[in-house]
Image 1 (spheres, rainbow, N blue to C red):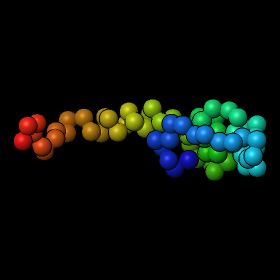
Image 2 (cartoon, helix red, strand yellow):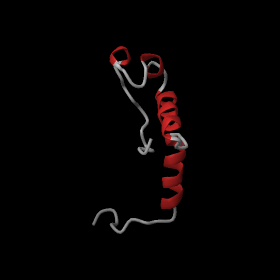
Image 3 (cartoon, one colour):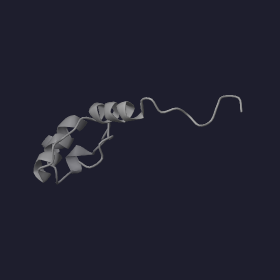
Image 4 (cartoon, rainbow, N blue to C red):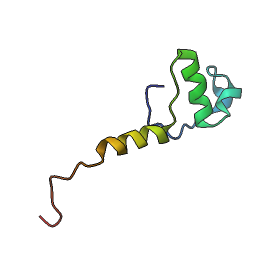
Length: 68
């Protein structure tokens, strides 16, 4: 739940004990929502995380110019 940029999670659902195979067969977002709810942490979809990163970086310029 603390990895805000996780976009894909591949699990061998039938071998999982926790979360249950039923949860693990769902989407990455569904699994993350379940885990976050168990920890009482608000789930944030990766697209929201990356939008925040992009917004924070807006206006920053590179210190290296092309061709140098």
